[in-house]
Amino acid sequence: MSAKEAQSIANSRDLDLVMISPNAKPPVCKIMDYGKYKYEQARKEKESKKKQKVINVKEVRLRPGIEDNDLNTKANQAMKFLKKGDKVKVELRFRGRELGHKDIGKEVMLKFIDIVKEFGEPTKAPAFEGNNMVVMIDPKK
View 1 (cartoon, one colour):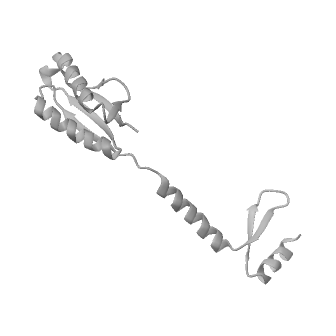
View 2 (tube, rainbow, N blue to C red; view 1 turned 90 degrees about the vertical axis):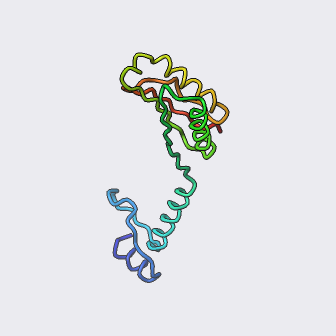
């Protein structure tokens, strides 16, 4: 069918002639209501966005010399984030001479992980990034 015939059929039905694959030999066209088609596509895209779950990363900062009550307060804060379904990044900062006592920092980090273990689990063991010991904790499903 020629393009002129297809266009006249589309005009008689008050529809649009849409080119599906213009590079094909001969080009493939379809008669449809293009406005309705675009509306349906936008609605499908909006529905798929609604079903997506946004995961936020919350951060909790600690120090090697943190006391037990302060550690429990930070752990409660992290547990609240994990209950909501957010990931938690725990960062233990070392300053100056504290870098000579990384074992103390490791103990604090393991204690923190032990406190929050019922709500989340670490993705990997605590690791150093510069002067900071960092661990990511994912919420339990």
